[in-house]
Image 1 (cartoon, rainbow, N blue to C red):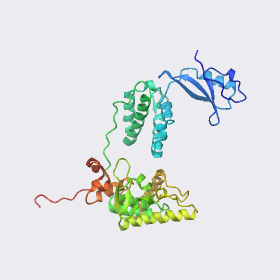
Image 2 (cartoon, helix red, strand yellow):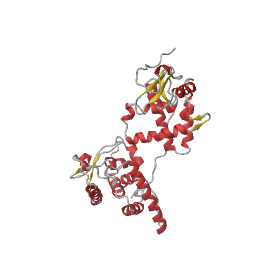
Image 3 (spheres, helix red, strand yellow):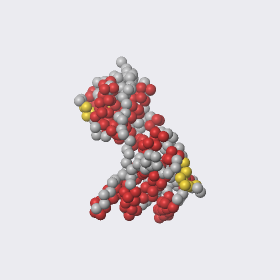
Image 4 (spheres, rainbow, N blue to C red):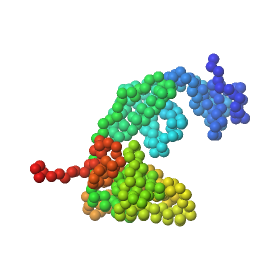
Length: 369
């Protein structure tokens, strides 16, 4: 008979530890919970799971124990949640964690032939199942299908490396091929939305748009900007995703957007009687009027979405044929509008990446001219 966990730990006063079922133990963390130790049928390893709350009576513990005596199979949901308790997870960026949690919810909630994929035993996950999920999800959104496939791959690769599973069912399953977005935001469309942004309640949208366009930046890179990025000759651009950092020289438009953001930041902190951080790298230029803290990506995305809707309505009222564009299209527009060395200006390391962002039609001379 398998020996259960030691019962020397303090347990709730209304429970006699000597009368607990084998394999049941008290976890005093948080508000406390009753845990059940069991052998995973897929891996052969011992695991524990919560199965009763702190107020459960002895009879309720026995009832729950009897209901769960059958071997408990490891599922994608439990494996995913185990990954989310690791040091690897804790080191991930907040935005990455948020996206992974969205992937977890979507994958686990997808219905299969015998229930949801989240509760499907790991032993029943095959290359065919992963491929089928990718293809089916791709019918709704190819980009989300690829992101969720990447999460599935990460979970199974981690589990295989740490010997939680014997085989990796994601090997050989590749991402869907997606044609890169090639939209170029025309000047008239950009200027119209910029004006609506200036008139909106979201003070930070228009300077963020201008800085992103003029410096060819991603949304997250704009939000990273602090006083430490200011140089006499221009703005130091710290790029993500392996792109090269560079300096964008000042011009009147960039200086105007920057000065407006800094002045508004200073006003907000002054009105809140909130001191400026001592270090320049801690003084973000785009902050929340409500909290005085750096604005997060989701908040800026929400504001941009509302300004986009307002722009569309304004265009309809004025009979203007306005073509919507995304915030990331501003980097694409910035690269396309750049004269001279576009590779250095964009921070990209390869010419192939330039093909994704340099989308403006070229004007060329006729032959023999």
